[in-house]
Structure formats: C-alpha cells, structure tokens
Length: 125
Image 1 (tube, rainbow, N blue to C red):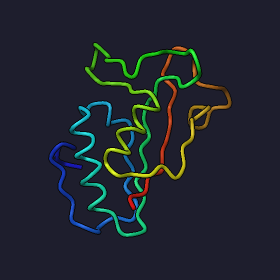
Image 2 (cartoon, helix red, strand yellow):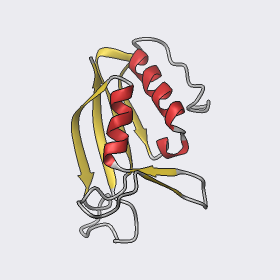
Image 3 (spheres, rainbow, N blue to C red):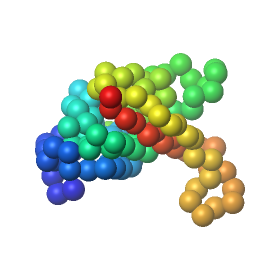
Image 4 (cartoon, rainbow, N blue to C red):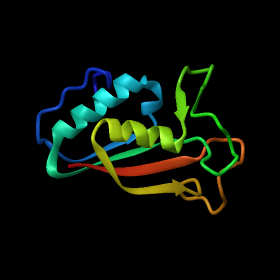
C-alpha cells in the first residue's frame, strides 16, 4: 500500500480477502474503525478480512489493562476484548480467532517477554 492506512480508499467490491498484519497498532481507535469500514466497502459479498497483530495476554489475571502504549514506537497493543469491541463497532463478526503459539518455522513457543500474536477472520454482514 502506497498510502497511509488512514487515507486508503479502495474501490468498492474489489477484494475477496484483505490481510492486515502488524500495523493496526499504529492507528488510533477512531482511525482503526474507519479503516474497518473502508475494508467492508472494499470486500466482495463473500469477502473476508484477516487481522493479525500483537495482542495482550488474554488469560485470566494476566493483566487488567485494555491496551498499552509502546514508548519506543508509539504503537498500541490492545487486548482481545478491546480488539473485538472495535470490530463490533465497525459491524464485523468474528468467524475465527486463533492465537499463534510458535514463530513461523520454529518448533518452540514464543519467548515469554514478547506479546502474544492473534489472528481474526472477520466478515461483515
């Protein structure tokens, strides 16, 4: 994409799949919801939007933070309920959600000092 996500304006019904990976943490909530609305307009009727991003631990007692701000790159890492609330605000339905348990091609789990990675497949009805 040669334009900022905040300004991306794809043609209507032009994609069957839109894959968004490790970039929504750089959007404010309002920019993120507006981006999701633009994705909805760009997807075909059977289209799917995939969001893959860092996600705060979603185990009970892990944290009561809804999000944290990374002071180095000014990105935001949201927790699962926060992500899913933003998806709902944009009219998206989660059809599948999965936590990545290993790094691509690695046999071992992610190191404990990095954020978990979660993917969501979203549909707009």
